[in-house]
Length: 277
Image (tube, rainbow, N blue to C red; front, side, top):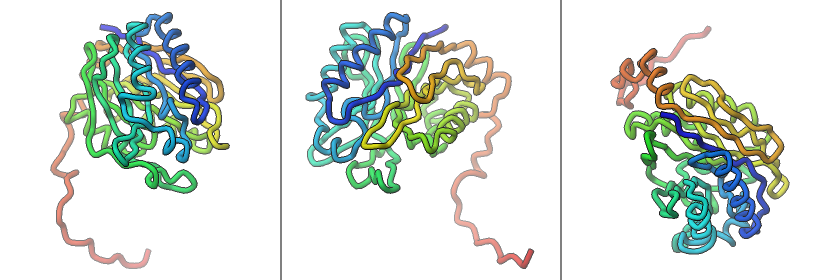
């Protein structure tokens, strides 16, 4: 079975939620015209990725961007996965929403690995999520991740082995200085877990920081099915194939070859000191 999906590589205007939602509606419409059943948007696509702006504009899910995304999904009969800024009480989360074609919210993921290095210091503005999220959509199970999560292979292996995830979704606002890291890490996550990766990254600038685009659909063998440029707004469209997924895993059954007892953390004596080289 084949499912056509899309990743929307867009620029955002920090703090202008209405303008960003108009852009998202436009790209969702383009995805529908391309016969995609699902479209993925980047990290915090509603507010942009500027911490002070996020602190001002983040809202609960019954306000702000999410109800409008629900309306877009319903109007177009299209499943939407998008990064959004979420407020719950005094806390702000960097989140993803999964909204089905009827406009219902099916799942939520709160970014578990916050980008702490200066000048971003996301951990000073946002609270970290504390659980993994996956959801079955059609013939596939999708695992949710956000941007910096790509640097932590543990979350992807857990989604693949404990949640039986087939497709990793990453909504991102990844900057230009680490463009090659983005490409390599996204490809590695696909290869090592024999799963699809849908990467929706930003372009444009927020508070002077340039984003590197390169949104992509990568198959379980590490082949790039479709990819975008590093600097232009584009819609990436690709197919997810259940047959390809089964074939890759059958040819090299790495999950059954794992030796979990070697990977678990154990209380072992420290290694003896080494002599001079």
